[in-house]
Length: 199
Image (cartoon, rainbow, N blue to C red; front, top):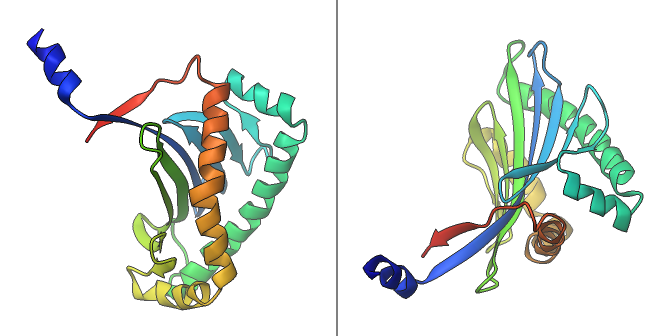
């Protein structure tokens, strides 16, 4: 009984997340050059890779997205095929910046949002990594990029000067991402497990 009262007195906030991970590689055998996955509350719901060149639902409840929008999967496939080409070019650019020729190299991006269903607070993130280290991070508060390594400074200056890019990212992370998160949570509400963070 004491434990119940203690837990009742704690302020518990339940947060939900929508995260996307993109990864491209060079010099890795028996693995797709590009892989993209989407997760809702840590549950993979969509996947694409350069071998299949096709976006695929990983949860049955995502079929509701196709019912609501019959072009959903084909649009995701086309978008990710284009992203695959961009990431392939990025690897070449990054190898030049780091003065690398051969070997195994990995370029990654993680972006998404978290939404607190009690306070409605939204946090977004957009991060790039290269060979396991941070490369570029978007600061949503200042709408500027952070370059943890000198090889990223060129891109930071270019992207910081593009105000339409920062405005687009802000709108995505604050408005669109939480809207999609809520839609996906509605699709999978019977099977998604709520994750709680005690604050």
